[in-house]
Amino acid sequence: MTILVQFAIGLLFGLGLIVSGMSNPAKVLNFLDLGGIPAGTWDASLAFVMAGAVAVTFVGFRHVLKLAHPFFAERFHVPTRSDIDPKIIVGPAIFGIGWGLAGFCPGPALTSLGFGSTSAVIFVAAMCAGMVLARFIAQLPSTTRVAAPVHPLES
Amino acid sequence: MVTTTFTPIASLFGGALIGLSAVLLMWATGRIAGVSGIAARLFPPYEDGEFAGRLVFVAGLIAAPVLVRLVTGSLPAQTIAAGTPVLIVAGLLTGFGAVWGSGCTSGHGVCGLSRLSVRSLVATITFMATGVATVFVIRHWS
Image (cartoon, rainbow over all chains, first blue to last red; front, side):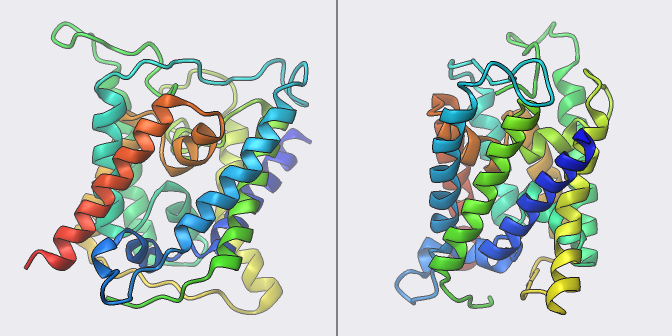
């Protein structure tokens, strides 16, 4: 039952990406292209995707997180850190360069696999390699690095 | 470059569906709908027993266009301009950076901002800035 529900939730996420236009890298790149504003080629759609998503999530989380526990689990796993360490700037900086190069972030890239796109397969394979590499490095003993996170994926 | 049409209504509605999905995942499993975190944990080392749930979430993402094609008979336009070398470099940077920075557009940009997380705000501003800078260099720095 839990499995079916999680599949449906992933499906809904993917439908949102397609309906919003975010599954099209050209649309993402045209949003990031602020230099295209004078020529009129800037596509502001992504700002509306963010607005719609954040508005619903902001209200929804407020209600859901008041519950004693999730429907299928014992407790909520909500990140609690608030410190600004180098990784929270370096990671997103690297991520943004990759995003700007191809117009893919992880969600739309995975959804694009269902479009039957060979380019998406290549991107996703490289993306997974990058993820595995980052987790491997984060778990190395921190003899030379000052701050090794306990859980590299917790935000 | 390919010009695209400004779609405020469809994008707002699609964004709301993404938000609804994030809220439902929190309601059902108590987890943040961060696609990079979910995808990265499909690979070892495994820290908990929630592999199957993550796998079917990703399967749902991939099944969405299949469902759209079955129901409507077609798929919306998709233009991927990048060639293979760029796709490989971009994929590596995107995957590495998302894990190194504890999240991507969904985990930080949608869920984190909705929780008013300072770390997610810093992350979102940073990847927006380097994304804009990257496109600017590629398209206008010549």
